[in-house]
Image (cartoon, rainbow, N blue to C red):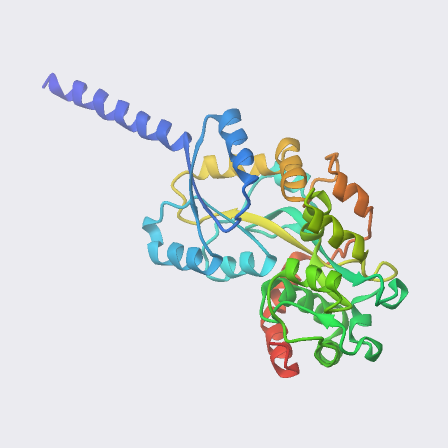
Length: 338
């Protein structure tokens, strides 16, 4: 009979150890592939003592993995770029409701949903060749469909999430009919078939292969911060326009994440997301990957972002970017924007 208290004490001690282990581990599934994030994660561990086990992969692969793992999934947090990809996780029912007073106070309402939040933003800017195109001719996204730019527009694939989110914003603001008219105008102005990534478009504009393109802002900022002679030359050849400053503002997309429904370390997961909204983490996003903080009070000391200057950002709710993704793809397909 005396064994029972001993066994009970051992069991309680074991449960205590499990609880302690849960507090000190976070399993992160991340589709962000930036080397600078290493410092971000290391700082979290230093501050909290919680060790991060990280699995990186492409968004669709990670989402499929989480779905297949089901209730046995070890994943605590899913972190990725683009509102549409975060919305897909929501649609698959993978996220738990996100309840944090700190996040609600820190992050503007249009940059979060009931189960995921944005932690940095990037703008989709217009890049033009200063010798071939006048800045006044490309002040708005709509200008890119103007026939005067025939044979001058370059882009990455119309099926890429960055372009789909931009099109989703156009649909949300202008309606489907105008959005399709715009898409057809873009296709009519192609200098070549869509290919490559945003950096490839910038290089093509600088080389004169194209007159104008669109790019996420951080690709431009990376080139601006580079000391390589070839990158310095690229920046000398191009000009940057913040689009739609007199109307809706420049389209922005986000990096964000949420706590997964079956997360075994939910408390640690919330701590991690709250950490991402801290001043330290917000500065890592800005300085490390040339993104903008979502927390307005954070001061950024990034020379490239400072040189790009202040701009009016589109305040469209991130949910809207997800809402029109399917329509965006249909419109691009109909217009021949492959």
